[in-house]
Image: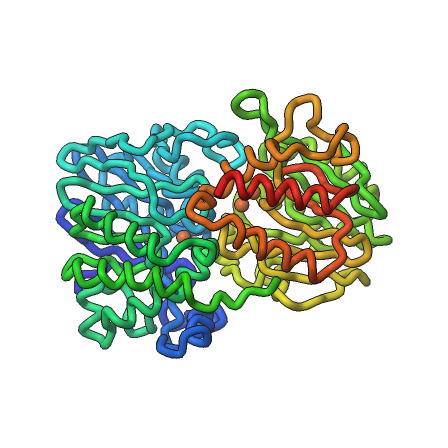
Length: 288
Length: 246
Ligand SMILES: [Fe+2]
Ligand SMILES: [Fe+2]
Ligand SMILES: [Fe+2]
């Protein structure tokens, strides 16, 4: 596996190549996951006994497009404020970073925006239009994008699309037409064990992971990530997922907190539709 | 602007003006708590100067004991560095559902962080604060908090409302007929974009569980002024707004 690692524990960042022009820059904790996050993912296993209680590590993703123009998707989280800059400058070499697209303004996604802007003067920050009060989110000077807008990088044409599932109001997804690259942001969060770090989903299958496990994880994590779905309709939601994948020919499924899926997409998209139906009717375990 | 809400509860913080002249408030609440003040949310970095001046006026020489965060996004934490620089001994109380190294600024020290667990009470400077899940929220690790002494429920983004310029700092009892449903609707439709996918009756039923469980005299939203006079009316208007959005 070709992998370059920067930093360790909370600052650890791994870089892999998805295509010759798209890099996957991700953070996860590895061996120290339980120590740092208190066995966070084991809590999910309590909610759903089918889940692996040893799988306590969560992924934070960023993606870099190296085309005629360069574009970074999200910034990783405050814990990686140094290493993300290091990884970026290694990949970019003497090229400059042209754009940074912010999927939504929470710190795990946008927390290093100021540091990246300082390191790359002239960087154009892009985020969701149709909102208000950007200054309190630290995005006063951002270029605002509407659904249907296309960022033309050269070979890659990134279209801003309406998310199926949102938590933060300032959220959008994108779809890149030539590679079939979809970034559905916080959707489809899964977990992994310390011996499963920095793997594409097809490589996860080589170390004991399965599409069934993925389905059960997403059905459980969706209740945490999108707590509002308990108020949604399971059939309407499942149908919306099916329709979405009919509309977009996804070849690379690249969320913010999931192993990048580059093979057997159909099997995983079917699992996602089922997972969302299961999520809605499951136990949310809330304290009122 | 410093405003006295009820008992030892104060509201400070500014608002930002958006489209059509509607103000979105970004409030901080303070319980003076007899020598160990408790601060709820840290406000926006955009309002740093005003917030810090107001906090100094309100607290005088007394350092706050604890800063409680409802959740960690910037409008609630942007001014955290100024508060913790002014009062480095203050502890930060966050939801047990967040991962501090990813969700708090990188310079926050681990020793400074304490966790609130939904379904539990803890005592801070002699004052019991209880924690519950954020029932309507835009960020997963959001919790709500309740102070039994004043009967205040801190609801983070929920129960916010947009304010016209002439009403920017008014409480519900200072309007002719409470907070109009339209103001609540404008805010919730904008802040919670998932609501059109939801069944409004289910949303309202969940909210009702929160109010059935405790005696709420004051609702303290970050993005609105405290609802301190007629909570039942505030909840009814909120319910109406939700039904119109969903
Ligand atoms: Fe996320
Ligand atoms: Fe929020
Ligand atoms: Fe907020």
